[in-house]
Image 1: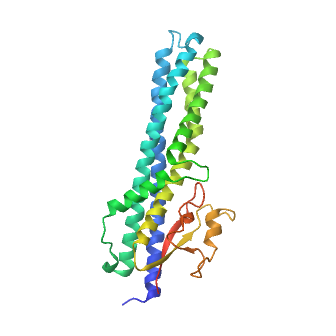
Image 2: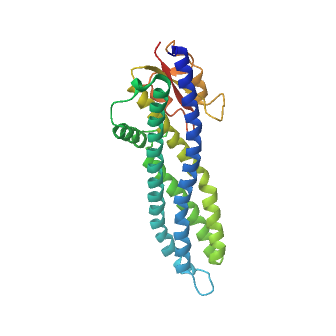
Image 3: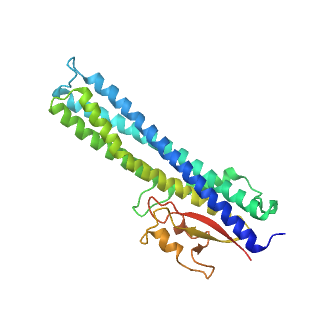
Length: 270
């Protein structure tokens, strides 16, 4: 029979591997979200083609009408963005709770198995993430709306300029492509922030339902910067349980800062 120290070491190993696996999943999620939002670029290309004259330019007299039509595009960006983020959060929540369950069973045995439905727990994680007010005072839908508004403003600028300068639709499409490329960092930041938070919350919610877990240890993110909140938290010993150990109810460990890639492991009772 394994000792408590051996079980703790095995648990750390399993949850460490899970965090690496989630990192790869989150990379795929970023690419997925970018592809989904990029679909609106094709819609805009079709819209510009509809407004074009025979010489492939767009008359100044149609500028205001075209810009009004961009309101529909903004709605499309919001929809594709929210659909993508909903998928990311649900996947991440499921990964977090499942990884916690698998690690506990792998370290302790089948006696650590959870006797409640995971669908309910994953739903709780999803609601926590999408309804959480951040330091900016916004919830997830607000951040997606802000992303869509910023993108529309940038598109308005290049299209207005292109029409006034008499550029061809092909020239404007090239500028539109640059706008989408320049905005991808915002999408990536949103997916990394919300996805990793859902993963950590899922890990934490599974810990809350375990009689064997006494605390959660936060491990600093990949950036490893001294001034990052996750790094600061990982060096604190708030409860005398060791550095970086917090209670599952300490919500600050679930989202230390934007773009955070920190992860959580379990501390077992002696």
